Image (cartoon, rainbow, N blue to C red):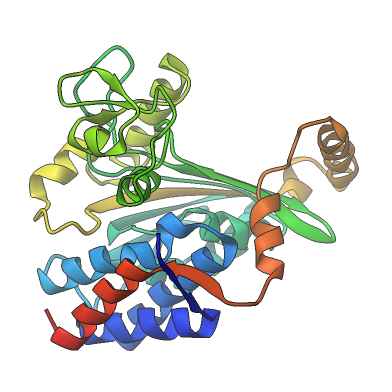
Length: 335
């Protein structure tokens, strides 16, 4: 695989310029380019520049409004709702997460529902931002069908990721962000692009047979992680990020999608909790004692440690050269 070296500033500039050229507003271009750059910085390649062609396709097809104006409302002191106005999720987050944090700090618990939006990024930026404000956070989104429920061979669930953040006084929050599929679809697509195999149990081919060939899994279906247990969590996320927030579930999202390769319209559910109110001020001692015990076990690495280590490196990142050529060609041709 050939790669090219780009600084983080160059990654941001390329993403922003490409988005602007495809019709995104300054605010949307900045918000999306920021999460793309942060993903590359932290080593999350499947949510970095790899996503830009999909963002561009959804802008040029007209599915996504490049000038969308997300609006925040507050049905109750602890229930917030953001109408994404058919734009990208990162700008909706910018306009709503601080208000969610304020509501949770004041009341102990608060929820944010985001609808009519297109989520194509990692989930950890949302939960990490809340964790940095001393809050416990949970977020989840659904997608288009790509995962077969346990026991089935037909896709019904999205990859349905969820993210969790736990605040750590004096340290970055503990954060995990994971698909409920055995592997995130973006990682399967990158493995297919790079000619790599994937672990057994990742998915089925179009005939319903197990395969380690990512190209065949893309034609077939992914499997949930952990058998029926992961399948049930994926089902839960369908309901939390769909009916609970007033949006569609994955199979309904697919029906109305244009098929341009970009993110479908969908919903997001975010829960923020203030441990100072729920537990009292002794919670940091208890949680740190537990996490220190966990971290001391041989072979254990706490979630987000690798991302935080990557973040310390402010140097250039290696980007797939074919991907860069594709992005730059899109930018120069305007198609």
